[in-house]
Length: 290
Length: 318
Image 1 (tube, chains in turn cyan, green):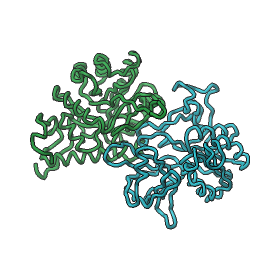
Image 2 (tube, one colour):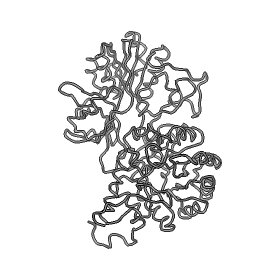
Image 3 (cartoon, one colour):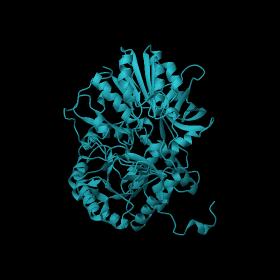
Image 4 (cartoon, helix red, strand yellow):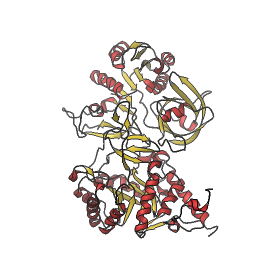
């Protein structure tokens, strides 16, 4: 992990999103899909915390070598400030942080699900899987057309693509959960990856656990430091031996988790007590992918 | 003094630290915290994550919400318990070379005593700090620090079982903060840490809901700096011989020097380190430069040296 002052090479619009490309060779060389970078806010102290963004693109070779791209959804004060950033401005960046998605060794058919700007790391993952000779299919989802992240690029890197919007302004109308069973069957997905809001990840997990498809999800938890210091970004994760669960930090132990290890009922707030145990006890989970 | 590099060493009545800049509770504690970006050996000391007797899973998420110039957090004392700390994390921390100040927490008086007992005679630990902002199970889950008598009860009990110097971490908003500080010292506290995070809440107006899982959390960061400086000033004026560690919103060496001038013997940094892991090192360098400029040999030389006439009496600010 490196901390550096990185120059913005350019800022591009993609629907409502702003995609920032930085010159950050030390980070770009190491970054893998699922990992993230953190960016410091202006020094006037009004906004305190660094902002954390999944890596959308990290180029090691070619004309873009040493550059790193991440996607900003300008909804809050900090992301809006970054959305207004311009080329040649410098940012205080730390990265790459967190655990990346794991690539399957033997399984070949991968379904990738990206909801909202969760599609940013998913597109990066699609490229890396393709480079390893895997088949990639994709579900890209958002609330409306302008929030569907780079649908044309998604189409380019995947064998088949299903686009779903909550308001039906692009593709099918509905949520990921509405098309997921059909797409899993049609593509004969052997592995599923997802990034997006909690509810979407849960619907992916439910289906994959039911059908015993190995899957990994990248969570989007509110995070103060991203460095493993503050313990604010925890996710309840079942221990490997099934003896219980621990609140683990999504910054250092995630943001990518094996869906079979996440204690979904606890995480979604369906179980009120912090001491809750599932009625059948915790399952023992083998390492990923099965 | 010109040309002589000032020393950064401070002596908190027997607790000798190579630098007055300390990592505040809740940031560091094990080899995996800070992922190597914090230079632990260059810290004056490390205050550990607050330790409970049994492992604690902490508060529901979300645990952090941003406010103007600050953050509101509620981690709920997530930690692996004092035994795990002593056997796993302390040996690593001690190897880093920075003295360790163990933060003692509990939900009952008995738990505080057990935790403090477990931390005695351990290599690396030079002092205890008593965390008092958690809920008191014996008093309707109100924070321990709401009442002076309860503060004194806890601090007294910890001080009696501890052969290590004990610092009581007090909140700023007690109506009689100075009395509370005196009460702590009367029952055996070696010194004080001022201040703890300030109870605070952030509401999501679109969803009509609190932003934090535990509804109310603690405000830290630059927003609380002047509040903390005032607390240190009031207490230090009243009891200049009692070591005070100042904490609250420090991000720059100027912030830290304000605390020293107000009467702090050392300072702690928390929130700013989450944002910039180099903050403690930069603050220490800045303090040294300030002392050098003023021709003062060590941080003790400026301790409590703020004068009571306002700066405006000297004319326009430069």
